[in-house]
Length: 105
Image 1 (cartoon, rainbow, N blue to C red):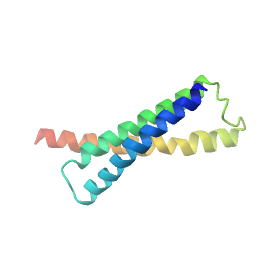
Image 2: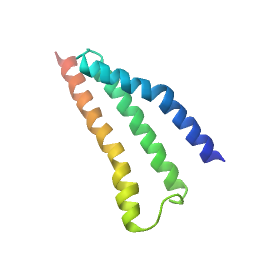
Image 3: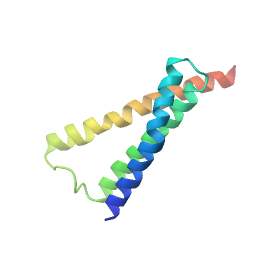
Image 4: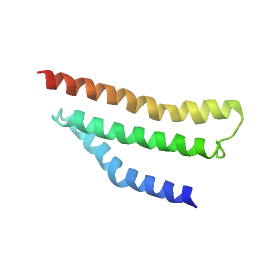
């Protein structure tokens, strides 16, 4: 039952916080608004935090919800879910770079 509670809580945060923040980030990016990199940093950190919780929860469960076949595990579970780590990671690095440049100026 705990994993269901965790999933519901996590997805509630995703729906009510990260969804609207992602939309605001998109609008800020389109309008070249000064807050776009701050929003990008927040949304990327939130996504990465969710990814860590997702993978850590599955690891603690002994990979019980993942198909043990190598192609499925490495191709789908690690590969495709890994994109949800790589893209926000790249966006986080980009935001940090722009914010550091702004602080130096």
